[in-house]
Length: 180
Image (tube, rainbow, N blue to C red; front, side, top):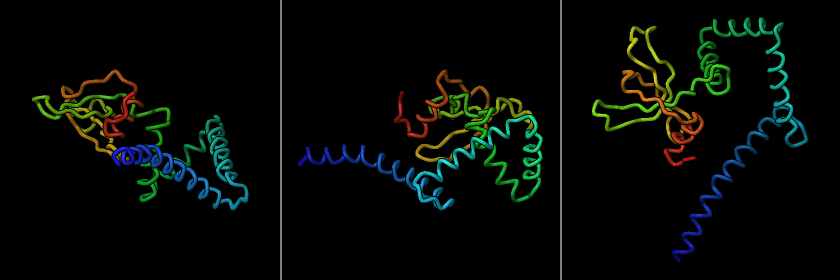
């Protein structure tokens, strides 16, 4: 009976992540395909990818950069739209833009005794614009979640880590389980 139970849990460890991943990818395909009402599975998804690539190509052209800037300024001037648009734009830029934000992993001491630490990403080395030049901004992603907290700490509490930022993010999001 113990062996059967062990096999069951080993099966769960493999089946659940695979099934959830396949389901999420399937749901994305179905949702995108339903927008275009194509009869060929995946055609809507392919069209969406092609559209995104074309928009990226057009927006990187010198002639259209001004148009992109005008659109950006227009969205950032509308009261409610500004909040949504800038949050999504900044989040996308943090991960895939030219100004990636999560590239400096750090270890932060939570007390002067240096007995408890958290791992995060330095987003601002100095908060001089907030009147605190001796403070740093560190983003702490949450484990098993796509959220996090921004904490402000003294620079002395921050120790840079000489590790790839992607590996650190995987380590944090997995709750310390993912180790490369």
